[in-house]
Image (cartoon, rainbow, N blue to C red; front, side, top):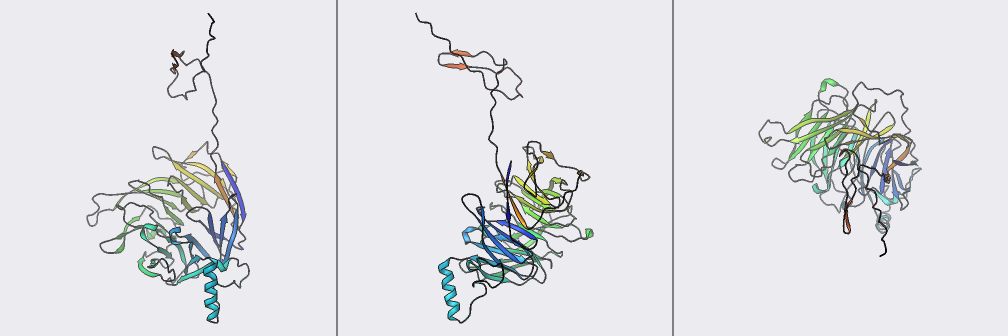
Length: 430
């Protein structure tokens, strides 16, 4: 079942992205109103707005959190062709920075009270750096897994992936451009492979929303080579020719293959199994298979996201629904729940639906939900209820001293009810 809470985000325009921190207790939102807002959850599960500030001079497309090992750090990207890194600071450091600025006869615009309307909490967040290398809109931004250090990857409409590194994690004002990768197609989204295995080199998947079908595959896989110290394209998913709006690697907890979710006109789940003899030049790097493909949304799919175990995939589309997908022991993916935009459940998880064919159509078109409010749904497991049944399919118990043994004589495929209680015979007084 679901427990949904609606939050008035107070954004004045379209909300483009929502990101949770590592612990799921903080949330950041960004919007076309050029503002970023940070929310904190209290002990009662209620969300409170703790910071709001104007982050860019254009629509803010994406927001992402760094690992808490590096502090409370956010990164944003925008239509204004820039990406920014923000850090939350304490009051003591804030007072020190203000005194330094006052001694220099000026007040920093990124640390002061905030002069724009609607700015709150700006004194707690500082813009550490502004990345201005892109020539067009920066469409996505992601921090690398913490095992790689403090790395930040961006992609933009100019078809270039840029990877930045902070050499000193204690000084987030210094970022160096380490790699500049050309995709030859405009980029819309990217995802780091979160695998922690040393057998898997650093990997990035990039999607393109190019509208031309003749331009070929729209998903590219890049791997980092320690020998050449360069990123190289190892695979192109030629089967994906539709514009890609989001892409996400599943957390890899001991699997020998990688799982990639793609949001396009439908939902696709791809598996990439590394080949042992791929060291030969020109040999394919992965054995690529389509694990599942769903068109249940019947509209464009905009977001895909995995749970922390990589076992459940959530997708959202223009049908105004969030759908949860899960595979079983034979790797057959099914829809296990559907959540409407208003927080109500559209379909019970007890009657899952399998993947639908591409020509599947629902009876009624749903209006997409509003994007100026946030609906947070929590999945709550219902407490199982045990029904005690007594049946004559139980063999009469054989009692030996203080122990008894009963044998079920029914069909082994049936659910076995508990054996009937053993009635004690009254003792006869001699």
